[in-house]
Image (cartoon, rainbow, N blue to C red; front, top):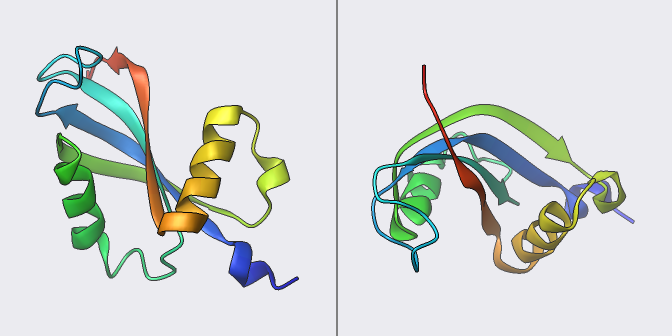
Length: 104
C-alpha cells in the first residue's frame, strides 16, 4: 500500500467561537482545535483551510503544530480515528475540544 495515499496532516491550534453551536460552545470562548487534512500543500493553502474553519463558526484561528500521520493505528482515541476517516473521505475534518481554554 502506498503510504502517501494514507497520509493525513494534523494541524493543531486554537480558535475563538464566532457563533453558538447548539449551545455546546459559548460565543467568544477559545477552544483547542485540530484540522485533519489530506492536502500535502497545506502551508500554501492555509488561507483556504482557515476559510473552511471560519465557515463552521470559528475565528482568530492559530495553528501551533503539525503532525504527519501515515497510519490510522497510531491514533489513540475514537475522535481522532473518526476524524481521520472523515478527512480521507472529504479532504479535511475539524475536531474541536469541548472545554474552553484560557489564554495567558
